Structures are given as C-alpha cells and as structure tokens.
Image (cartoon, rainbow, N blue to C red):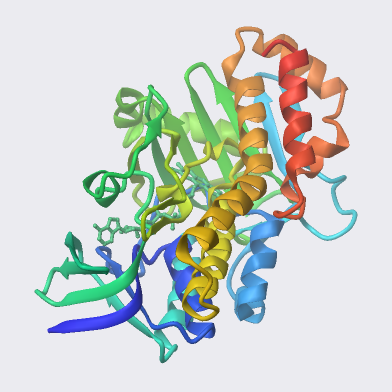
Amino acid sequence: MEKKVDVAIVGASLAGSSLAIRLANLGISTAVVDKSAFPRRKACGEGLSDVAVGILQSLGLGPALENTEHHPFHGYQAWLGNFSVDIACRPPFRGKPKGIGIQRYLLDELLLKKVSNHQHVDLYLGKKVRRVERDGEQHILEIDNHTTISAKYLVLADGANSILAPRLGVPCKKAKVPRWGLSWIYEGQFSQPVHRVAIVIKNGYEIYCTPVSENRVNVCFLSRKEFISELSDSDRSKLEIAQALEKIHFRGAAASKPVNIGPIAASRRPVHHGSVLLVGDACESLDPISGMGMTHALITSMLAAEALNSVINLSVPRDTAFAELAKKREAAVRPYRGFTRLTGILLRGTRNHERVLAALAKTPFPLHIRNALSVDPLEGSAASAFASAILTVAGL
Ligand SMILES: Cc1cc2nc3c(=O)[nH]c(=O)nc-3n(C[C@H](O)[C@H](O)[C@H](O)COP(=O)(O)OP(=O)(O)OC[C@H]3O[C@@H](n4cnc5c(N)ncnc54)[C@H](O)[C@@H]3O)c2cc1C
C-alpha cells in the first residue's frame, strides 16, 4: 500500500509530534512514523522550561497540560560539595514559575492524542522507517509492515543518533566523548515545598533531581558508559541518589526500574539538506545540563512548520524558504546553545570547580544569563553574545 502525503516525519516524539500538529493546522497532509510504541518511558530529566510551556500552550495544549500531573519550578541549583549556585533562577516564589517537571510518557501522550485526532495526519507508531529512496521529487519511505509513504518533503525528527541522516548524506559534527544517561522515578515525600531542579556535580558525573509531581522526582545520572553500567542496580547508586535528593528535601524509593540511554554526544547537523529538514535533537542536541533539549525541539519544529507553510501553501521557492529557516533557527537557538555551553563549561569543564562555584555562589549570574531561559526565541542573540563574552573574559 502506498500513502501519498505532502510531508513525511520520522519520529513522533516532541519535535515530530509538535511539527505534525502545526502542519495539520495549516491543512498540510502529513504522515508521522515512529519505531516506538507509546506510551514509553524515555531517559530524560523531564524538566520543561517556561518557553517550552508557552509553545505547548500555543499549540492548544495549555488546559491538557494544566490537568496533567506536573510540578512547577523556578530554576536550577547546581551543587558541588557544599557550594551551590542558582542558574536561571528567578527569586523563588516571586512571579510565575519558570517551568514544569513532567513525566515524558505523560507529555508524549498529550501531544500524540492531539496528533491522532487530526484528520490531516496519518500516524504510524511501532513502525520503523527501514529505507528512504528517491523517485524523482518524491521521498519513498519503506516502513515495517511493507506500507510505503511517498512525500515531497521529508523531516528527520529521529533524535541525536539518527540513523537516516548519515544514510541520506547529511553531514554531522559530534563531540568526541559521548556520555550515557540513566533515569528513575522516585516516589516519596518532600519535607518542605521545593520549586527547583537540583544538579549535583561530582567527579566525572552529574545527578539531576527534577520534581515531577507532589510525590515524585525524576532522578537522572549523566556520565561515561562504564560508570552508568555500574550504577544501574547498585547500593552505591542508592546512596548517591539519597544524598542528591536531600538537596530538594525529598525522601523516597525507586518506583521504577531505571531507563538507559546512550551514547549521547552533543551533535550538530544542518537544518536542511535538499528537501530534507531536520528538527529537534536530529538537528542539534544541546547539553542536558540546563535541560533545554525539549525547548529546542519545540522551537525548531515551530520554525520548520513556518518554512513548509511558505513552500507548500504560499508558493515561496524552496531554497528561499529553507535559507530563511536556517537564518531564523540560528538566531533562535544561539542563546540556548550559548547558555548550555556556558553552564557546562563553568560547572563541569574547569579544574577550579570549587573556586568557580564559590565565586559564583557569591556573585549571582548577570540578569542576561539568568534570563536566558526566558528570552523570546526569536530575539535572543544578545544573551548568547553576552555568554560568549563572559567565557572569553573569564578565559574559560
Ligand atoms: C539524560 C538526559 C536528560 C535530559 N534531560 C532533559 C531535561 O530535563 N529537559 C529538557 O528539555 N531536555 C532534556 N533532555 C533532552 C531531551 O530529552 C531531548 O532533547 C528531546 O527528547 C528531543 O526530542 P526529539 O523529538 O528531537 O527526539 P527524541 O525524543 O530523541 O525522539 C526521536 C524519536 O524518533 C524515533 N525514531 C528514531 N529512528 C527512527 C526510525 N528509523 N524510524 C522511526 N522512528 C524512529 C524514536 O523512537 C524517538 O521516538 C535530556 C536528555 C538526556 C539524554
């Protein structure tokens, strides 16, 4: 059976499903294919920034999000020994919370429900795209059950470890040392109200604790492969986690087996390659240290939808629309890239961790940096320039 659509999207996670909703709203016929069956658990810190929450609201998901189990937070607190520093935190309890912790299986379900209700979208879950071939202007996707999808435009939303991107000749820059992730849901009690994510930085690894409900916390390790394998089921991980959870005044026990992910290497690909577009992690994976991957996925999908609308509905020449997309994407993503680089280098990359953190603990981040999570995605280059300037001046 061959299904003909305007746009085929590989990957129905955050980037793919949010793009499908936007395209369907524009009357563009779309097929979305994902090899996973949903709901599924995904190794993720599960912290969603306020910008991401705003984008989900613009997709009409505000009320559903409100009614789904989640936990608001104001920012991140990074710990090294007894030192701590607030990153992108607004003063607690003033103004609206910045973001929310929400379990990925719940978030994915919200988006996929919206996708599956749309008459312009065909959704294929639990189906792997095995091959992509060209037939003139069309991309022909072969999926598991021998159904083929034929589409003029192909979008790769298949994550940082995209298998299709190299097969289609898309160039990629990857960081040399990949890391691995491991995440659990812990269930228990907070001894006081907590509205922040704790990042505990140790020698060679980090632990993230993100409250995701009144009685649940996502605990996520990020490190080398050997260390992660050691931790999957050990008393050492229990002790490390209990100590990390103290930073957010939480006591509890694992409510699930850990989910593993890796290798994760910060990677970067162009936003388009001929008539193939790339969104989310498939295009660029940001360092999870300040949790902006999901925000990035939603922003890049929003911009890709705009470009596809220009080409398909407004007859703008493809090269013009995609060049414009590349420019807008760069401007939108730079502050997030700059911010993750800055926090990553400051908190992880320097040999003088303690001194840096001690100084940072006394001197709050400049407002530009603190607000990096809140900048309008289309007007944020000032924050990025500022972050680069600080890096240069500090010699980091
Ligand atoms: C340890 C860790 C912690 C993180 N913590 C946070 C956080 O707290 N906050 C935050 O904002 N971000 C965080 N991130 C980043 C965030 O998880 C990602 O940026 C986000 O999931 C990217 O979404 P995506 O849709 O681009 O890709 P993905 O979520 O990776 O989805 C890709 C999809 O493509 C499908 N797929 C792949 N190949 C094929 C194929 N051939 N055929 C069909 N389907 C295919 C996969 O099944 C998958 O569903 C974290 C990441 C890690 C690794």
